[in-house]
Image 1 (tube, chains in turn brown, cyan):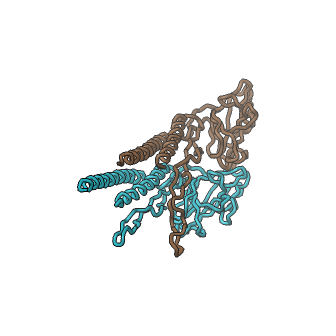
Image 2 (cartoon, rainbow over the protein chains, first blue to last red):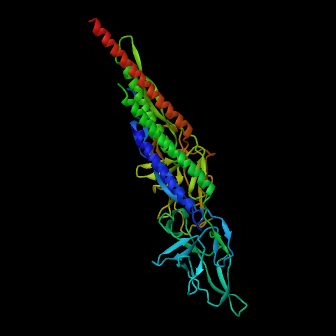
Image 3 (cartoon, helix red, strand yellow):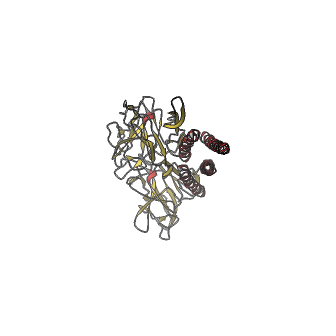
Length: 261
Length: 243
C-alpha cells in the first residue's frame, strides 16, 4: 500500500524539522545567529484516472480525475534574517548593526565572509579582529597608545591618543548588503558566504540608504525565540506521531487483509 | 453468486485509495501552500441478470479544499503569501505553472525564482530581475516590486492569476498546479503579503478521524467477506448432504 511509504516520507520530513529546531535551540545564545526553518513541498503525483480523459461516447470528460500524491519532501531549510535583540555590554569593541547589513571579514583563505556578530577584539598588532582572529575588512588598526575608542553610528572609528585632546580617525567600518540575505550560506563560526541565491554583495557606509546604523557597546543576540521554537517542536513531534499513526493504520489494514479467509 | 464478495472488494479497493489520500494529506501537513485532497466515491450499477442490479463503489474523482491556509510570519522579504483567490505564476520548460507556495529567492542573475529555481513571472509573463545594488526589497499588496536601488518606479509587478474552475487544476508536485483553463487576472481583493507564507490547510484532527473511520470500515468489510464465506461453506455442506 502506498500509504506506508507516504507515512514514511512524512516521518522523515518531521525528523528533519526537529533537527532544524534543535539546532536553533542550541544556538539560542549565539551572537548574531539567525534561526532556520525547514520548508516542505508535496512530492510527485500518480494518475489513477487522468483529468480530462473521455468518460462517454458523447465526448464528456472527467472534470477532476484521481491523483494520489506520493508524500512530502524537504524543499529547503532557509534562514529567517530578522534582527536579533541588542544587548548592552559596554565593551568598546562590541558592535551591533541596527538594521540591514553585515560586517565583512577577511578569511585566512583570502575570501570575504559576512557576519552579524560584532564581538570584536584587538590582535597583538592592534588590528580589529573577530573572536577567531580573522581581520575585519577593510581593516582598522588601533594605535598602541590609544586610550579610548569611539565608533559613530555611521561607522567612523575614532581614537583618542595619549597626550592629545582631539580624537583622530582610525578608519571607517563599511557594511555589506545583499538583495536576498536568506540566500547566504552559513559556514559556521557565525560567518556567512555569498552565494548565487543571495546575490552579490554591495558595500556601503552604516546609516546610508539601505544600511543599518552602528551601535557601539552592544551585541546582537540570536533571533531565536525560544517559546516559538518549543511550540514548533511540539507541533513537529505531533506531526511525527500522526505520520506514524498513518503507518500503524496501514499496517492494521494489511493485517485485516491477512485475516481474510 | 459471488456478488457480495465483489461488492465488498470494490469498497476495500476504494478505501485503500482513500487511505493513500489521507496519508498524503498528513505527510504534507507542513508543506507550504498545500491544499488538502479528498477522494469522491460514486455508485456504479452493474446488471447481473434481467431483473437484478448490484451497486458497486467506485472512486470517481479527487477534489481539493481550496480554502486558505493559515499565514505564518517569517519576515523574509521574498516570502510571499496570497490572501484571497489566486496563484503566482512560475515559468517551466512545459509552460507556466501556478502555485500558492510563495517561498521565493534570487538566482545568480538577480531574478526572483521559487524553491526549485523556476522564475516568477510578472504581468507581461517575463521574469522579474532586480537591479544590482539592491539591499532592500518592498512588495506591495498588488504585487508591485520596489527596490531601494531604483526607488522611483516599481521594478515589476508579480502576476497573480485566478481560474473559474480550480477543481480542474492538477497537482504536479513541488506545490505547483497546471490547468488547461486560460488564466485571468485575480480579483481585486486578492492581496500579496510580504514576509509571510501560507501554511498547508490540512486539518490534522479531521485526517485522524478519517483514518479511524477508514480502518473500521475496512475491518467491517472483512467481516462481511467472512460472513459470506461462512454462508457459502454452509450452503455447500448442506447441499452436499442432501445429494
